[in-house]
Image (cartoon, rainbow, N blue to C red):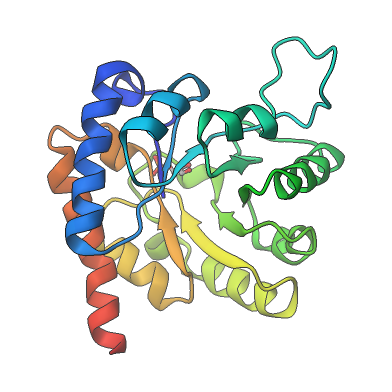
Length: 223
Ligand code: G3P
């Protein structure tokens, strides 16, 4: 999963051309790449790009008098397949998160719920999102990968997930190279999420090819 966040190339034409590169790599290498984009870009990207487009957050507001809310119904209508929820840059109260996950299910959307520590994996997993994304906030944007700096966070999250809800588990924060992705999956994650290594790269295609190599190496090893 590539979280576009709010960089220069996260919106407008830059986001479109960048997403085309990701679409090409995903198809050529047969690796699923999900993009999580600003709400204003969902509709255009979902119409122009074939890889899954996710939102970065949704509000758990019911239809009605809720000025400025962006809800599961709205992102679905715009073409999103799902959303990140509770990112540490957009954290949610537990009650709001639980409502949002349920509303996502009603709308037939996938939810990738972030947790900032492994102790939250089992309880949040019980809410049955599609996936959990474990990200220690102190490593986000640092280029110091969770799988190198805090491998025990991934292995403990994997154990907690096994005992808890058993949902897909992604690892993120500081991931830069294919080796970081490879290690994350070797430690038991089902996939990885990243932002700055790709969004801030002078050569995004090369950065993504490198990350995808990590997944292809695991695949080869597990044959
Ligand atoms: O959602 C993924 C993100 O928080 C990780 O950010 O910049 O450390 O890859 P980054």
